[in-house]
Length: 260
Ligand SMILES: NC(=O)c1ccc[n+]([C@@H]2O[C@H](COP(=O)([O-])OP(=O)(O)OC[C@H]3O[C@@H](n4cnc5c(N)ncnc54)[C@H](O)[C@@H]3O)[C@@H](O)[C@H]2O)c1
Image (cartoon, rainbow, N blue to C red; front, top):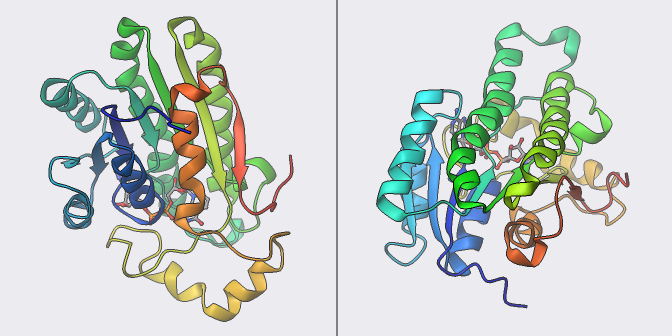
């Protein structure tokens, strides 16, 4: 099926690492022009070079900072034209029991996972409303559907992404704009495909040993944890005009981990 993504202008926040990288490359493979909006310039440049020249553009963006996000959106509009698609993929968490987690980590989760979504969606909506066209796909999490152990505040931010996507979808559907959410389960990062700002560098990486991952896989009906490439087809479909009659929906791509 041709998804008709060739030539589309796409912004992928957090597009440099792990899932974001796979999504960026997935759009590039379909012939779209992709902007990586990420804080990790070195990793963004690496991904930029993984596709034919001119297909992927790295633009330093901090999604927690409204000025940084609006400046990126203005840049994309002036350099590449109308923005067709926004993928909200920037995110961060670290697994820790609620009772043991320092406030600084909650604040970072809320800033990136919640404010990052609000800033990025709000920043592209004026131009999408004006054009009467837009596709917004956000990477949620099964944590936001079920409330995951050791991910209390993160679960809350992802539940908010799901609820806000539905609420905004009701308001902007009349302008031909859709918002949908794709919810992965566990998808560990690898040193080859993650950057220094990735949640898979540092502490978190050392927790998910092969032994832990093998045990985790048993909770998945398909008996494996995910790969970044697993989420790409769902994101591409929901970002395409093949999905023009789908909005406000939440799709888990998680080997059956949740079945809601
Ligand atoms: N990997 C998983 O197991 C998993 C599971 C469910 C949901 N998710 C969600 O998928 C998304 C991607 O996860 P991942 O595993 O690829 O994470 P990752 O940490 O490897 O990549 C996140 C990217 O976001 C960037 N980033 C961080 N803060 C930013 C900011 N303020 N502004 C702009 N960019 C910023 C990082 O530099 C990095 O490139 C996240 O939203 C995450 O919550 C991941």
